[in-house]
Amino acid sequence: MNSIHSAVSTSSPQQQLWIAQETTIERTVDRATKRHTTRRPQFAPLLSIRQWLDNIEIRDAETANVLCQVIPARCPFERTISLFDRPLFSIPPLCKLNPFYEQVVGLRFRALCYLADECGQDISHYC
Image (cartoon, rainbow, N blue to C red; front, side, top):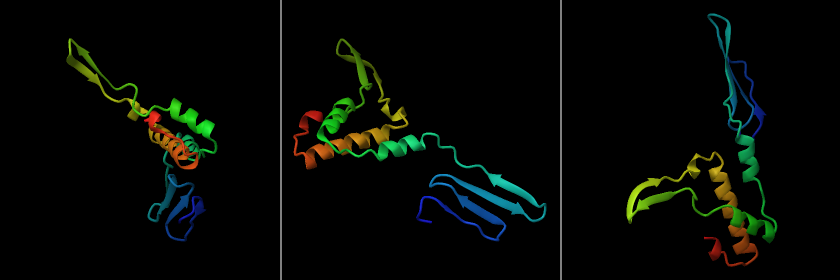
């Protein structure tokens, strides 16, 4: 089952149907009661957006520069609030709450790699 979309059907009482990598519907038949039981697929509404972000290819330096300027290197919300040089409290990084955090950081990394490897630009001012 290395392909993304494939179907499996057997004559056994338990059958599986593969819809995508993350979603599977499992259908079982209880022979004693002749009832069909179906497990619902895993709900992943953000999967298509994550895949789209992962599949964005960086092809020109202008796009890579814009992405590196727009996507911050560190979480902009993380702060330590202090009064008279004494820390009162700190705000933790909230970027981890973003459901697309890993994909956006990966996109910025790919843009930085493109600028450094393909274009030969100095990327130290983006870090």
